[in-house]
Every structure is written in structure tokens, then in C-alpha cells.
Length: 383
Image (cartoon, rainbow, N blue to C red; front, side, top):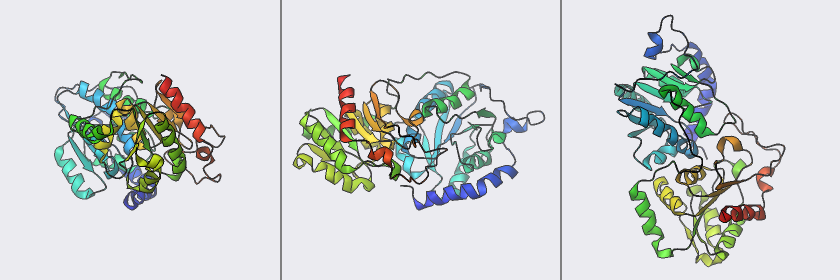
């Protein structure tokens, strides 16, 4: 769940964001020096990589959003070979950028923000990429850094600040949206293989996972993550427990992962078969360690939550449940990733980052039965 600080930031964005960007003066140097200061075009405008030394990526949001930026980061690294890439994000996605060393430094806007802003201005970034889609204050921060080039999605009136404007389309898979940002700056249309891993895992996290799992033998590993960032994505822990029993009966060893908010659910799931064939690591692993475990699994099961995108990123086959979320935008692509979605008339209901209160008792998730998930697991295991 979102912290109080982040909820207040979102409220502040809704209240003052539109007013601020209406009166703020664009500062990107490539705009300021253009004749008549015209608005940036939507067509890609390749930047010569020579001389580009520092790039900042602004990525608000949760774990999943951050994971899906990695194909874009790789495309940027391939073009701007002499540049370092830093990230401005928040506490909940900090661990994502510690999974490997593609990102040089991580800054947080939800911790000592004025000091952070001062540090960023001192760094003198030549390119700032604002990956936010719906809110206003990220472009306010990007504009305050006075970069030479500012790239982002032309939504909620932010295009006036951008030297490289990209149209945002809600139903498109999020990786492709982020890759459009890279294309706007490089002039190249990056390729993306839906069936190949795109998230590299540092050797130390792989070694940690190997040591942790070594005492439990070499049976196929199935990971269950019972957490959900909102009640609209919640699936009952007793149903996950039934799934765990089925997996154990079919010669899998089960590992339960998740944050501290999943401790009670994880305890219930791990108790199946007297806990002999399950390992409960909920609340006990940092995000990079979680990634090391998930990478070693032959199967991953959860609803639409951040760790799902980690599983996709490292190439672990998934079975995932969708209801309120837009499947085309967030569900992993490719043949080894199976979605369970009842397709009720009221879903998906999330639009532009907001999910309204559900008058139907979250029927889209309640309607998903254990048998539906087992059938999806069998489909994945046949491949």
C-alpha cells in the first residue's frame, strides 16, 4: 500500500500541479535557443551521443513500473555509450535499480526532497527523461534541472517543457511506451523480444539465492507471491494455499515471497503439508535477493503485482491473475506467460493510474477459482 507521504504527494499533484505547469517557464536549453521557441515536434530527433555524459531518468511509481524501464535503459546505453544513467524515484522502487549495475546512482524524491533537488541540479544532467504518464510534478522537477534536452510523454499539458515529445497510448504494453522515449532520443526503433529475459541479475544475488535454496534439494521450484498493492488485485490466501498443495503433490518445492504486508497470508500458505515442502521468505528478503530466488524458479504465480514483472524480466514462466488492471498494458507478453482473467463487463476499471471504489466486491478477482489457476499452470508446464 502507498505510504502516507506518497498519498500526500499525489494529492498535492492533483491540487497544484495543473496550476504550476500553466505558469511555469520552460528551461530546456534546446527549446530556449530555438528560433521563436517553438514546441518540440513528435517526430524522433536523434541526439549526437558525442559529448553526452550524464542522463537522468525520472521514474515515479512502484516496482513493476521500474522493472519495465530496463529495455529502454539498455537502448539508451547502447546509443549514449559514454554516458552514465542515474534514476530519480522513490523508496519502493529503489531496490529495482540495485538488481544490476546499469544505473549508476539512485536518488529519492520522497526523502529530503530539497537536498535531493540541490544534488541533481549540481550534477548538470544534459538529458532528463521523465517517464511519468499522469502526474504533473515530475515535469516540474525535470524543468527545474535546466537540462539541454527534456524527453517525456506529452500528457496533462507537459509537452511545452519537452524538447522530445512522445504520445502516450493507454492500452499499449508499458515496455513499448518506454521504448518510444528511447527512440525519440536515438532515432532508432529499439527491438524487443517478448520471449527473452531483459533483466540481468548481479552474480551476488544469484549466489545468495543458490546458497539459500541449496538445503531444499533440486526439485522444480515454484514461487508464490500473495501480496497486492491494492485491494482490487487481492486473491484470497486460502486459494493460494490450495495452489501450493497442488504444486507440492506434483513434485514442486514452493517458496513464498513478499513484503511485510504479506506475513499472515504467507504463514497460512507455508503451513500446507506441515511446511515440509515450502519455504516462507515473506518479509525476509530485499528486492535484489527476491529477484535471485525468482530467477531460479521454474514457475511464478501471483496477481498483478510488482514481482510479476521481475519474473517476466528474468524469464521465469508465470501464471498471473488480472481483474481491475489493463491486461494489454501490464500483463507479461510471450508464450510462457499465461493470464487468468474472467473478463467481466466491469473490468478493467483502472484508468490513468486511478482505480475507483468497487461496488461489486471485487468480483473480477473473486470469480477466479483455484481450478482456473491450476489449468493455467498445467498449460505453462506443458510448454
